[in-house]
Length: 451
Image (cartoon, rainbow, N blue to C red; front, side, top):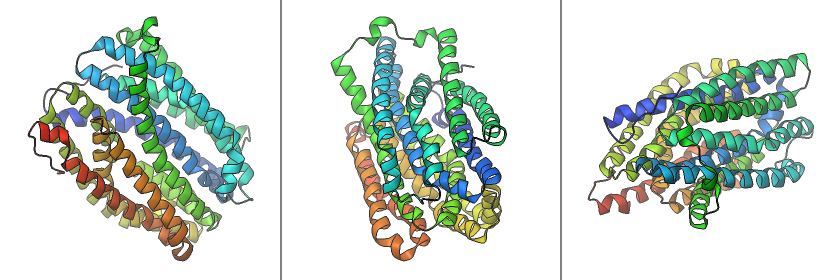
């Protein structure tokens, strides 16, 4: 399965695209089995059950965002070691990353799980769907350690230039997840909790297969026993990078949780339409997100190899890809929005369809802005500019809080739809300011440009 892609030599456009393609496939299948939850719940269990999943979708994204961010942060340090050909240091990073991931995930899972009923109450979850929502999200949080460890192993493989193996493994578990969804919901009558158990089982299988494959095929990446010994300086660096990227993702997700609180108060039909649109939005965002994920190890490895001019060329190319994709996608959405929302939600209710279509038509045109902010944020993080990306996420959190408190109560769902585009523009301007003044480029006399 392994195919190592050099990110520090050869044509940079080709390197980025070839590395991003398997990432796109991996993200597609991960999003696919999340979307299958929505489709199966909507078609088999109805609008009320779909609303229960949608009401806690932002909490689900919080789990995934934290896990992915923490793994990416640890992967940045690993990629820098790999790019510098420091393979001994790479193994030390892997060993301590495993220890830190276990500690953080267990503490977080236990802490959030204990306060979960209170969290759902604070989110104004409709009493009609409260029990179903709790049964779904409690399973997801119980399996947080599995999610974090899989993302860590996959991230380390990507740091070593292998984005293909995680794709193949995720493909297997995605197919299994769809089968388990149908079995648990339709045959075993487990309700919305069945979709959560199916997701958790698929992630566990992904983790086991990934670990077995590394042991069998990539022994060169496996840390030895002494690589797990505590190193305060390295652990501090790893924890700092991992938590900064996890916080960056979590702060963004926390803002979405707060915004979801405002949406939950608009009624379950609005929640159903928004849920379908958000699932579709996640699919449409995959090319942008996959390029961003490729940019992270690309930048880190090239910094490790001291290929600084190659760094800025790759970032500019990634931004241009986002611009072209956003323009094309906007045209498609304005033609087919209603039909796509119907397919995802399984609903024929006019309010559900109108809600989903409105969200897509107001958010998709701002995809180019979203692409640039994602690429700049991950690039600055990979350059170890840790605070600027975190501050940008705080800007997003504050923006969503202000819209939830002051705009949504008066403007209703239209206010929800314009929340993220306004926040994206503010974040993008902030990140561009610091990116264009990046000391790394100035030190090496490299002109920094967005496109």
